[in-house]
Length: 282
Image 1 (cartoon, rainbow, N blue to C red):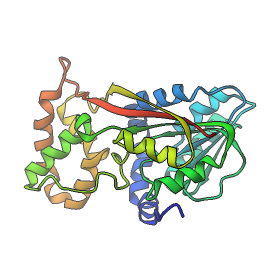
Image 2 (image 1 turned 90 degrees about the vertical axis):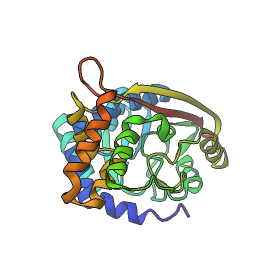
Image 3 (image 1 turned 30 degrees about the vertical axis):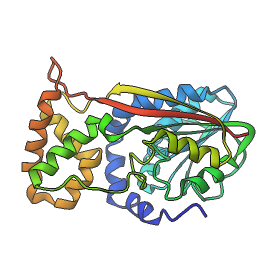
Image 4 (image 1 turned 180 degrees about the vertical axis):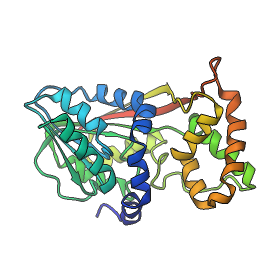
């Protein structure tokens, strides 16, 4: 069994999925450098058959489709119906015949065909049982197939996410929290040693990892950055929990905290840090 992801699936098919679909352009812009690094590590060749895990609104699926070409094939998989609806709409607009989308839990759902590459941009950290999930995914690869994915490193190395959250918690009088660092979520794969062990236990070989850093541009100024952080990242969940009545005072505190992170032009673009993992199926 690959674990029970039902709670997350329900969230991504409700207002959360709808909101992320509406934020497609913003999220793609923010995380593009990290996804590009994993795509480069995947070393896509023309004619390859590829799985894109956690494809969201399909931006990475389309990029992979352009790399593999007309004789290749890319299947984007996500649990979010609203985000896949956006992906299918764009696919029709682009008239890309070599991409398709599947609404399913990639950790356990039957996946059609055998593949050359599994790719993911921040989509594999949410599995409730990662070893069985990666065993399942490995079985979709040819003997010489491979996997390439990007996942966030430690929260302390990602001030774009944690500085807004810390400021909000302080403003609200909340403690920092002691949640399980390995629980499904954005930073579940921060521990390089743990992820390497997961992949090896799942049967992958030749595991390699590279640290990637890039600016995460939250906004043209501190206020814009605070608003962006309220939509994307850990702060967004906290704001949903506290409700609208304390939103403005919280954002003001976040804005104040982000001002020291602004560059000479006023833009707030803290460094983000991620791991790019690659491994062979056999």
